[in-house]
Amino acid sequence: MSHARPAALIFDLDGTLVDTAPDLAHATNALRTHHGLAPLPYEAIRAQVSNGGSALVELALGLAPSHADHGEARRYLLETYGRNIAVHSRVFPGLTPLLEAWDRTQRPWGIVTNKPRAYAAPLVEALGLTHGVLLAADDLPLKKPDPAPLLEAARRLGVAPGDCWYIGDHLRDMQAAQAAGMHAVAVRYGYISDEAMPDTWPVDRWFETPESLTQALWPGEDEAACRPG
Image (cartoon, rainbow, N blue to C red; front, side, top):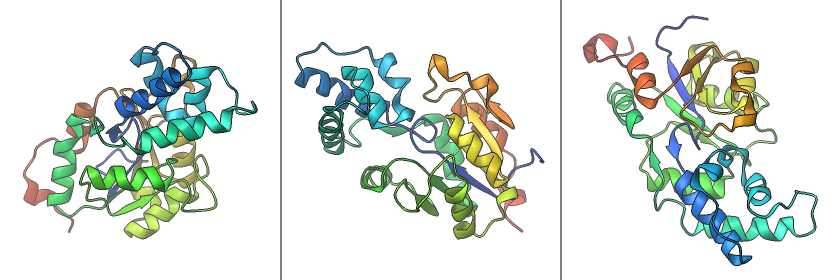
């Protein structure tokens, strides 16, 4: 697959496009405080954010999803998070020039996330992101690592899957991208835990920082020459 600039970009949300870890860490430690426990270090929570609410409950309280009290703990965590969904969450600063250039030249881009719409939509709205499509975990019967949400996003953007980059920070992101026939792009600045073994993922291209991703996709050449033709 060509490494040339793609016709469309599709991003994972948490840990790829938006740094949501501060608000999710707050909710995780609020759950611990609720149970009389001391806060966890931020970095320990950050590494688990892409694994979802259940993983954060297990990290916070040691309750596996099969535990009788897990569901109530997860509800408390998500309700706390929902009240503080965009207090400290921000687009990774190094991506802002890329999004601005993509929007200026009317290039299509979107978001496919396993975050439920009840949290994804308010977050994206609060950050003022002008995406062409947002597909959340509960919008389709299947979610990542199944390729269906990525294929639907490409369809809505009017771009062939092979002309898209899907950018993420989790194994399931790369599996979905490969299965959809998209360029699978992984970011090491994301929420990757020590046990994730990212070097074994089916990745077409890695980026270490948001700035390096922006530089690869928009190296600053004359905009007029880069407009869709």
